[in-house]
Length: 110
Image 1 (tube, rainbow, N blue to C red):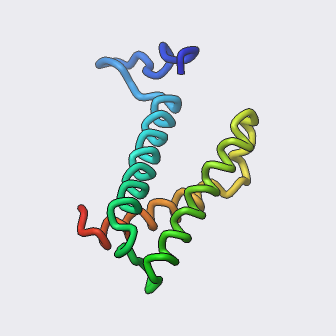
Image 2: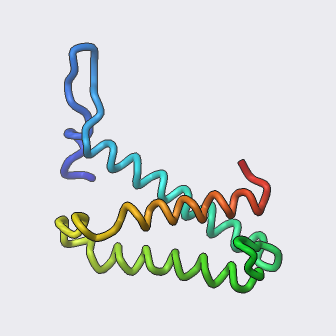
């Protein structure tokens, strides 16, 4: 971010406007918040957290596999900016937020 911080906003007729870069930062922060939420829920409710009719152990495994896959893909493709096109990131992100919503419902969070 240090190299593009001045380009996060663009001048507009009535003040600053969002840019694609700021939208990407915003989306990244939302994904990070959801990841932290899932990890905290997994730790706080490790013996009781169950979604999709799975046992707590199966739920932990499903969630951890999803978290691990996201981390592996981030590390593998981080240097390659062109990887987004055709990578399926939209589907993975939708599945990620769907699981986060299921976890929130299971632990009684809003």
